[in-house]
Image 1 (cartoon, rainbow, N blue to C red):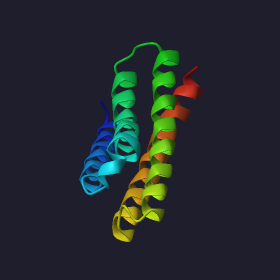
Image 2 (image 1 turned 90 degrees about the vertical axis):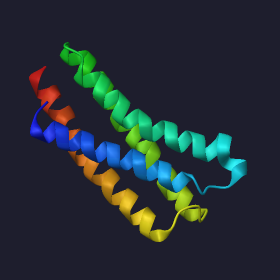
Image 3 (image 1 turned 45 degrees about the vertical axis):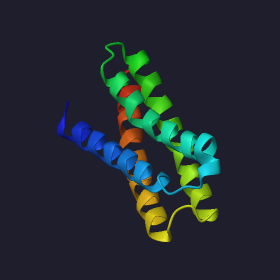
Length: 118
């Protein structure tokens, strides 16, 4: 794993940890709704990235990275939704959006690199 990829993975891990921290205080009636979906979408970002990294075929790797990117976009909407419902603070909102944007830029550069190798 390159230094760039390792840094991307660390940021993804940080994102998951922050989402788990924030969702601990979500309303109980959202346990099987927003809380569960938010956590699963966020975990999907890093899990699909790691699984894609472990693949040898470029097309398969690209597919997992694209799934990771899609999950990132899904989770980013859930950040916004959670903020509008006042489930998270403005500070957490800004931190999560900033982290998601940074991950998105880094992940997209990995996707473009693979697309150019095809």
